Image (tube, rainbow over all chains, first blue to last red; front, side, top):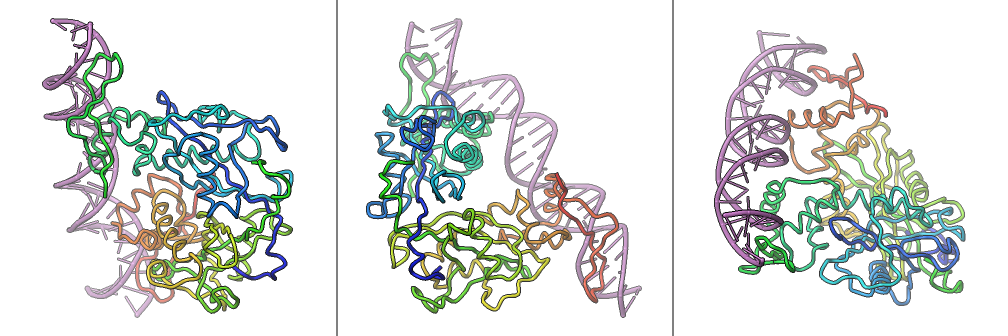
Amino acid sequence: MAETPDSLQFSSILCTVDVLPLRVREGRLEIGLVRRDKAPFKGVLALPGGFIRDDEDSDTLAAAHRIAKQKAGVEVAHLEQLATYSGRQRDPRRFSISVAYLAIFSQDNEVQSKELVWFDLSSAARELKLAFDHQTICADAVQRLAGKAGYTTLCAQFAGEEFTLPGLQEIYEALTGQPVSKKTFRRRLEDLGWAEPIEGKMYQPEGRVSRPAQIHRLKQK
Amino acid sequence: MAETPDSLQFSSILCTVDVLPLRVREGRLEIGLVRRDKAPFKGVLALPGGFIRDDEDSDTLAAAHRIAKQKAGVEVAHLEQLATYSGRQRDPRRFSISVAYLAIFSQDNEVQSKELVWFDLSSAARELKLAFDHQTICADAVQRLAGKAGYTTLCAQFAGEEFTLPGLQEIYEALTGQPVSKKTFRRRLEDLGWAEPIEGKMYQPEGRVSRPAQIHRLKQK
DNA sequence: ACAATAGTGTCTGTTAGACACTATGCC
DNA sequence: GGCATAGTGTCTAACAGACACTATTGT
C-alpha cells in the first residue's frame, strides 16, 4: 500500500458516505431522500450523505451510523455496506469517493423526520432524477436487496424484534418484487430455522376481524 | 453530501486500493501476494495495493487496473469490487480507506511476475499472517467467490475466451470448495444458456490419450 | 483391444408450488 | 353462523444427484 512518498499521502480526494434509508410500508419498499440545500445539485433530490470525519468517526460504518441517526432521528436497525462509488467526474468539485450503506429502518420504531421524503425504491431507481450518481446507487440497491432477501435474515431486519409470518412474507415480496406461495415461504423459513414462535403471543391489529397471527422472533445463537 | 465547510474538504485520509490477484491452477483457487518492502508491515505478506492518484486514475476501478497491471505484468481478465475497508486503526499512520477489488487472471495468459507469490486462497484466509486487515479481506473474498460461482459467468472469467466443460467444472469446484456431479453442472449450464460450443473445435492436451473435449465460449448479447 | 476421459440417458428421492382444506378470532 | 385471515395437508410436476452407459481419442 505504501508506494508513494509522504508528500502524496495528503490527497485532495473528497471522502464521503451516502446512506440509503430503507423501510417497508404497506407492502412497498421505500427509500428516504433529502432535497439538497447546498451546491452542487442544490434543490435536487439526493441520498443523505456527508463527509467522513476522520477525527470523530472510527470508520466509514461509524460515519454511516452518525449520518443515518442525524437524518432519521431514530436508531437504524441494520447497516450494511452496498458498494463504493468514485471518480473525478461524479462530483463537479473534484475526485470523490463515496461509500454507500443500506440503512434499514424496522417497523418497530417509525422514522420521524421532516427532512426525509419517501419514495418507492424501484421507481426512484428508474424514474427519478437524483444528484450525483445516486440513481445508479439506488439501482444497485434494488439488485442487492432482491438477491439477499431469500437466504438471509434481511427481511427480519425490516420487521423488527417481533413479527408475524404473514408480515414477514409481505416484506419478502416487497424486496424481491415477486409474490411467493404462502406454503413455499413458510417451508423455506422452517428449513432455514432462524425464526421461532413466542409461545402464546398473538398479533391482532386494531378492529381486524380475523384469526390472530402467531408472533415470532429470531432465534439467538 | 456537502454539509461541512470547504476547509474540511481536504482531509488527511489515506485513500488506497487493494487488489486480490486470483487464478485457478490445478484445481486450486490461488491468490497472489507481495512481500512489503516499506513500512508499515515491512517484510510482511500483503495484498498488492497503492494510493489512489486523483490526477492519473479516473476512478478507483482505474486505479485497480493500474495496480493489477503493474504487479502482474499482464492484463487482468476481470475486475470486480469486493468491499471497502476503513478505519483509524487499520493503518498505523492514520485514518485510511481501502477499496478492495477481485482481480481475476484467466488461464489464457499466465501471470509472469517476480513479485507475486501464489497461495491457496482459503489457507491464506485462515492461516497466513498478513499486513493490515488483509486476512479479513481474503476471508470475504472466499465467501463472495463461492456465492457467485453458481449463477454468474465468473467461472468463465477464470477460464478465458475459450474453455471446455470439464475445465470449467474444475474451476467451479475450486471456487465453491464443493464437488458437483458432472450431470448437474452441465444441466445448470444448459439452463443458464450463456455458453455455446464452437462447432468442430476440440481440445486435446499434449500426449493425453482420451476423447477430446468440445471447446465452448460465452454467447455474446 | 485397452486405457482414459468426454459426454448422455435414465431412475429415484427431494423440493416447489398450487390448491383446497381446517382453525380461530370478532361481529 | 358469517366473514376474514392464519395456518396445514396433500398432490403433482419439476429438479438434483447418482450411476451406468456410450463415444472418441492414442497406443
